[in-house]
Image (cartoon, rainbow, N blue to C red):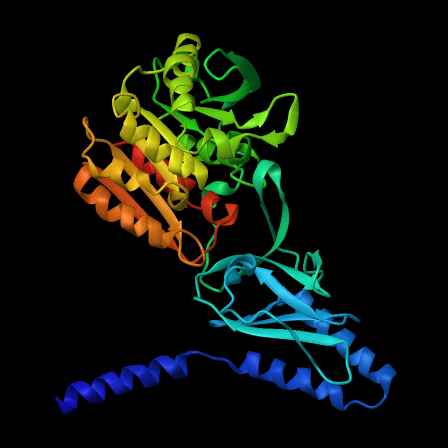
Length: 404
């Protein structure tokens, strides 16, 4: 027993020693030294040099091991940091208000996050002015309909999916943008975009994936899914597939996004898919007309829709990609999925652990374990953000379409 206890203590001690926090401690000491410089010109010069040195090393925010120091320099009455880490204001337990270094215009906020986390954030000046961190060059776009950039915090062990990088030697698929379609069932026009793999004309009939919020999944700053498809198919990590990206925005008024109505377990919208959209697409493009080769993919409300579509019509959708699903908006979805689907299907679900949907997703995971023949579930230390979703798209596609 004593031997085991000694081994445990030795392991803890070794682990603690292996983590070097000295750069963080040195920065912390330096930060407070600035308040002691009486000469204002000298103080400003030293602060300027210190900030520039950190900025040139991409160390604002300063990240050391699991510790983070957010920094801001400017004359303001108050400052706070808002982001995924506090649910953009919904998590009041996270103290996000900055502290000013006495006799300076320097502000800071200390925090700790998992070493593999990636988080969006903005700086809030005087309680109302949201800005991008002026000293941080890393950004991630987020938001409905294209959105806007947030500043991005990357912890040391976080890694970007290499499939997101466009490559010169990759064969590029064809994209037919903004195909206009009038739906009699919906009573209005919609648009969708088709991705066809390179050389599809000689491939025969192909599997298909239907993607809600398609404009965002395609946009390079958000989902960047065309690049992912090009890379995965070119590398032969997945079989060639056709992707249909449905745009939830009104064609003549793109500021009107219908997603909150269309993607809220909407039976009429499901009818539109099954009776109008899929038959039209399969008439015009070489697709396998079998549920086992047809997937539906979405995030947030779209993740709810993917689940609803697949378990309501498993004869149509044999695969469902579910990213950070908004199950809390329609809790009846759990009851729907409690009934085993027939035929069985493939499920690939992802969720973030930081103010995202892991609680609801884990509940669904337990249900899916008994109702689907094959499911994959992944969690990451991220929030409800495109930075989270884009990094997992390739994993979902490989779950469904990997070459055996």
